[in-house]
Length: 300
Image (tube, rainbow, N blue to C red; front, side, top):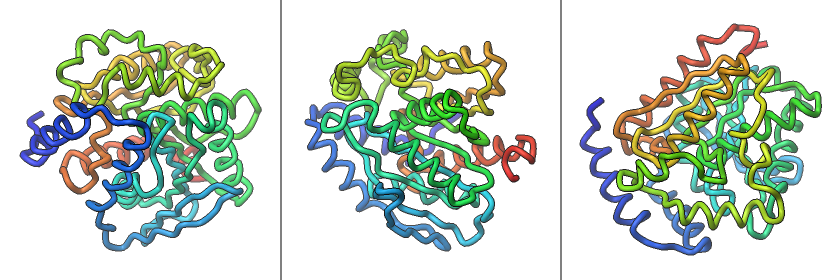
């Protein structure tokens, strides 16, 4: 796959402005909010900020959305940053491509609110959707949100709740012990993250809990009974082996799983939305995956 000129430009920009600068958590939060300045709402998409069971949230509603289907997206940011504003650039075109109403909640962040606060909030949002009569819920997440989407599904399974129709993970951060070899082999090619920063964020999130807890690091989970799973990851990111390990464990448990490794792409490239064509291509891949699932899973 040949990267577009726009992707090459933004890869250079991100390397200079994100990876090479050591930012505090507060600076990361400010930087994420500033990204919203690049966002232009796609035509025929409405954004409605609201409160869902006490959580700040936003409904992203494409005009063509199927009212029977809902996408619950859990934003990334290392469990210490990320917000509605920082993720509209990703979530609005995603909802538009999938023709699904998307709920984007703001879960509580560490270090102010360590584990299990984020998981509790994700459970609250999911169960609120069930109570509203949602017939089919797909759960997605990027980076830490991808790990949280997996933890949410595991917690729902253990509680005996109805499971999502499918789970979509974009560059999931799923091993907070950072045992994957890609932390070494992709050290130079990684555009956004450093293992040192991830270790700091992992400590903030886990608090006194063990990092190998499957609800913190889902690579240590048993995936029996899991819904269909799509994992997208860039070939050049240090979390590549998180994705590979997840796919291997899920397949071993009999899960319908697809691992898509995008050559030359970086961590959560769809976060740039319409700024690069590769985002739209990734969204179309998700759409194709969902359409390939049995109808009674995705539309009740």
